[in-house]
Image (cartoon, rainbow, N blue to C red; front, side, top):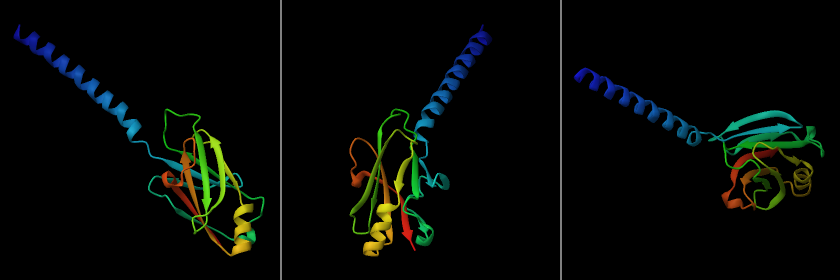
Length: 154
């Protein structure tokens, strides 16, 4: 009798232990997700960045840069709730002036930036450093945005 009660108790503890492990593992997947970015130049991935690598410096030679060249930014934050959230990229000069703003919809949907505006600023003002910020949500609010990339033209 004592043996069967002990055996039953061990089975219950094992069952609840497995449930606890499985549930903590399932919840852990959401909180352990690491954000990452893919940076494309003319549809070729040139950088893969992850959380903690924000503000990475991308140096581009202006002699090899054309007005129709494209910079694509794909961002994934592991948001399982929002598959069609508005996403935004803002390009700012060093005086915090917005140079270019582009929108897309949904995580990992490329936001494409044409270098025309950045090159124009470079040619007209001599500015060579631009910061790229990413944000999900209905409105682009720079103070909430993630600094994804710094572009240095040479």
